[in-house]
Image (cartoon, rainbow, N blue to C red; front, side, top):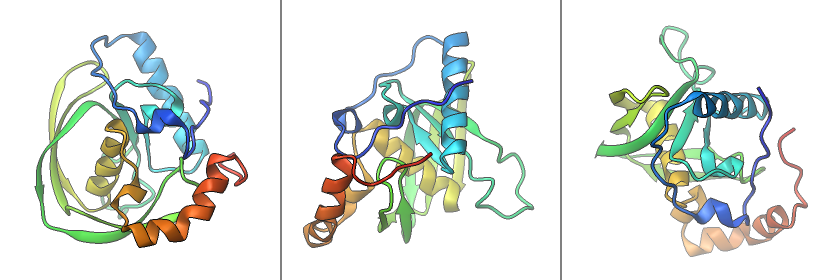
Length: 177
């Protein structure tokens, strides 16, 4: 496994849309494992391929540190070609992003979702979830669409972050490890 280089606010790849994965092979599995290592090393709960300079529709999620210990099957998992097909409820929670270090903002998102996706072998899956898992999936799927958490902010709130965002895009804010 290898650590991948994270891309930060201001990098054009973070605004691009991804393309569907068609090849489910050992290279995809290796890439997904590298993404897991990169996310874990940088103390994240989710990571999307564009954040490591790749335009495949693939996200990694690991909310095991965020959930109750009673929850099962929360080890890192991989969603390939995810598509959120149902949304319900609403909640506002503070979010952070590995690509926008030292910035935390309150984002309103649906509370429950249903997502269809493929696993690393290409098998079709269907998942209904809520709470932190639903939140992280929505955040990472946004990355696949070229959307960032700051896009949910009012222009006034975004203006308050302007100086910090400019520093991130110039590489002046230390990021990750």
